[in-house]
Amino acid sequence: MSSFRVFEATSSAARLEAAAKFLRQFPADHPITIVGATRSAADDFARSVASERGATLGLTRLSLTQLAARTAVLAMAAEGKTPSSGLGAEAVAARAVFTALRDASLRYFEPVAGSPGFPRALARTLQELRLAGITADALHTPGAARADLADLLTRFDAAFAEVAAADRAELLHTAARLLRNRPVRGAVLLLDTAVRDTAEATLIRSLTTGDGDVLATIPRADRQSLTYLARLSAAVERGEDTGSGDLTSLRTYLFETELEPPHRATDGSLELFSAPGEGRECVEISRRILKEARRGVRFDEMAIFVRSPQSYFGLLEHALGRAGVPAWFDRGTRRPHPAGRAFLALLACAAEQLSAARFAEYLSLGQVPQLDEAAQKVWVASHDETLGIGIRDPGSGIGDGGAEIGDPD
Image 1 (spheres, rainbow, N blue to C red):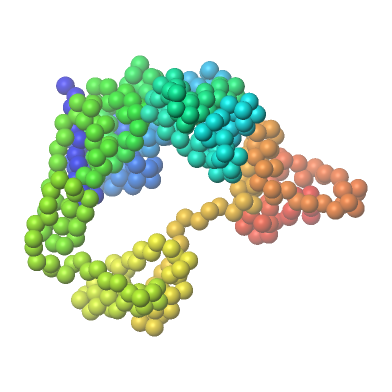
Image 2 (image 1 turned 120 degrees about the vertical axis):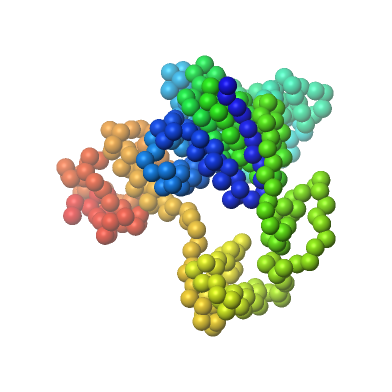
């Protein structure tokens, strides 16, 4: 008899330990599907399990969106539909607004419908309605705002149907329908996977209908996910934090609305301070780092997290340099350069035998070299400049200054 349990705790270490304990009860070759909050989180957890157990087979790591895409993409392709991105939803919303303004069907939203940010806000609103399972018929009321929203939702759905595209809501519902007919094999682990709407809850319901055991770990503050999972007849187990330090107390009661934190003496593991400006704040951070170093804490066991790196980078570098603290700075994930994206799109275009969609993507990135009139009159593409040969863009940062497109050398 399979079981469905939900383990909630404020400590991420406690949730990871509960997930690892859940996996230890199965043989090393037992099929297990790990659905993480992100794919990288699921990969990190699977690596930790594999390093502990040695040879491990049958671990499938996915995010919830990847699970839906892998499950539904073939069925949607058979129906002639293509999954759409968030940018595609904005484009469809902009088209719905255009047709509504053309037909003069808007009353409440008419004064703001032409503003630049309206299609993006509308796309998010309509996506939330579809994910919640609310149709245009349910919105029809005498009220002007709801009537306009129902009209725009109808046009939104019609535009998606016209271009044979599917938004996130349809992707999730299609995957849920397929998983009901063919459940996954083995156990299922939902590793801090947030459930934000009815469509995601429907997919998780279908994912947990198999014969294998299911465990879902969630942070204690995530009441919305707990509500959705409790509706799936899951047994809820609440993990208690061990210890009574300042950090444990903060983690336990920071977002707690039902329990009152007990009165206790602080132990100094948590310190709050305020400084008059970013420069003085960086100096105070340096002082506290030196204080911890004198207590025996190594520099590579300390970290500074800042909300706006552009405001703190120079000030922190100066303050830590004056304090003699060796520091390594990382700005995190940076936005890819458009030239690099253009280079990858061009390679994909060549791999797909000059796909029209890929070539249109390459042109949309605005990295096509500009030729002067003289060059346009005399330039002729050589055999080495065809899309079948590796082409490098000097602006992409890939390669050692490769030749530009159209440069025969």
